[in-house]
Image 1 (cartoon, rainbow over the protein chains, first blue to last red):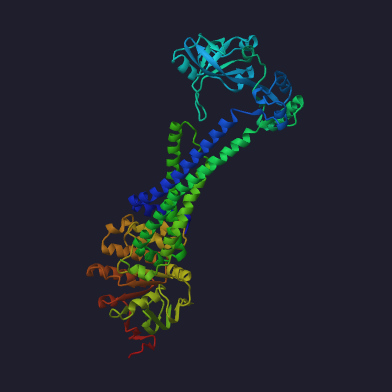
Image 2: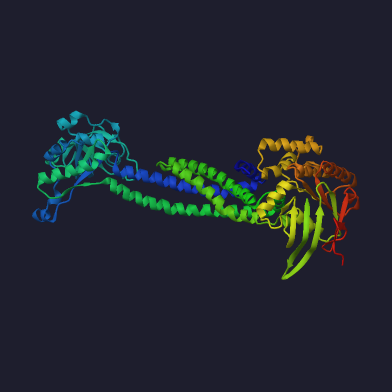
Length: 397
Length: 230
């Protein structure tokens, strides 16, 4: 007896009890749907965290961790910016490095007319613009001449506009940063994303920063390479070069964001696993529902089983018939569950603002797992059906 | 065709073994039309179950068409029922959700016959019982006599050598009963061996031999072997 034969038989007997079949499937639909939603949102969150940590692309950050001896020799070492302008030029000579993004940040007092506050002032080089897209909501962005001429021009954060200017358009006004005048040429867009906390910020060209603070050293240096696989090589070369220049052993190091991202990914994976297993429990409960209904169905159809046996159905064929029936039930439930999960996670991701990743592995896994549930929970009822005695079954009312 | 040699069948009632058949010896030749009669509780149903390979004897040997089927396992018995025996029941036992045609196709599904051939043969069998115009009806839409004719079509569709009918007219009026018995007679004339279990003498009259069963024994003469009379 062919599989198709069994399938048609299963479909027609499920159709005979439409309401019951749908209600039984509901357990599987919700179970599979819940698992899909959890995994999709979990994977989406993980992917988003990773890109937020590693940044838009192919970058590696340099940092300075002085040794104990250096700290002893110079107790003020932490107050000094560790990267000199010569360092940046030297780094730019490394062939793998596409650009060196350098900036310096200092907290200063800011004043506009009567209003005062503390502002984080960041002097940036031109490469900074390429990597960290500073999106301008009002006014204009920096131009090349701003950097070359060291113009006293600044971009301010949305938060600064709110606090210092009470929400009024600040473009064109001059503010005093560390008692030096800076003309506001633009306002940045409100930051979005998980780690975005609005704060009062001013970005100015590094030449201007130098004039204001009298220092040409950088506090942060990020290297950008052409492709991700050059990241490690370029990072090591850069750290070695700086250690040579500064005559230090290993005070200059690179942060491997990839590793951190993986660590974070691990956490979200565990979270997904935990919530996913809770969702899995509902799938298990759905399976018990299937078993329950199949047992009822076997009892109801005792006579049918007797007739089939009298006409020559073997116990194996009866077993197969009921197994395929429960598998069909859970398979259809699984498909509907995937649709439900996919639809729901799409809606959730739309409102939560992060992508939901419904991977084909999860879909395939969902289908296979729901079929496995059909087999596992169908086994007991099917076995019961196949063990019936044909004579008693024929007499069953 | 059928040879039963000192068949006994006992059932366990609690711890006690209660015999229902006590040493049945019986021969039925190919092409015979036999009626098995006896009061309820005589063991005629059990005898019929054993002949129909739905049950196995506790002791004794049963030869069906030359095969000793008394020690067959469930799977082999299923094959014998499928290939060699056609059943007709008092309650028709049609599957309610299948059309007449699909009901007739059932034994062929278990015989592994292709869909195309199944349909052709089922239609042929329905033509034979005169119900081809009702082939797409569900059993509920058929009269008792029509249901039984579908059941007969189902019984003959795998061309078995033996048809076993258990009170085939028990649920039918006398006019319809007559039609059904005529149908059996026709089949018998084509060479099919028929065994009818009944308690109606009108039905038994269609048979050319009557086997009386009482208290698990055969009363009437059967091929020189005399049932033991108390």
